[in-house]
Image 1 (cartoon, rainbow, N blue to C red):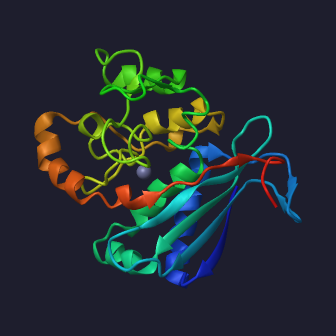
Image 2 (cartoon, rainbow, N blue to C red):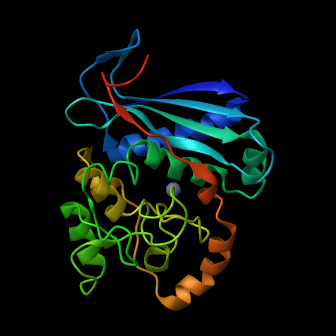
Length: 249
Ligand SMILES: [Zn+2]
């Protein structure tokens, strides 16, 4: 189970958005592990500390999200954070994108894109064609595109928190876990669920949304170029997780 704590200006309405995202991810990945004591608290799943507070006003930094402490052995997240700049949250809410941003960023806390490098799941890093090589995701990609090669294309543009930690935008379009929120509906595909299996979770494929690869006309109609220019998600910073026992303090 994903367990949330809230700090700062997290209204009941906003808490409900985080709770809905946690419930969605709880359908997809099983985070029920053996109880473990961390700094006086007994954790049985993943605890995510959520805060919304002033950082630097609208635009600029959107916030920070990622795992902070990993379990020994599996090196799956035990705790993580999701911090957002209050002014940006208001504009995401006004634009109707807040809920999808939370759903997307929670995936990073669970390890999507944030644990790939340390688990040696990226081939071709630093090239124009980096690929995610996990076997489950590669199988799902082959179902979507039999000619696509034997690993999944991941983002080859963007800053440190974007590049090589998402599915590639111009291949996957409006899928929830590309680097940009494009389109009006952001499906959570079997491909994304498979990637969580590749990093070590038990997953439930039956909770996937229907998804197929967009063609170029679909991409244009989703305003992909426009989305790349806006890129709210590029303004998120990432954490540097440490394995339990190795953390300071
Ligand atoms: Zn992201």
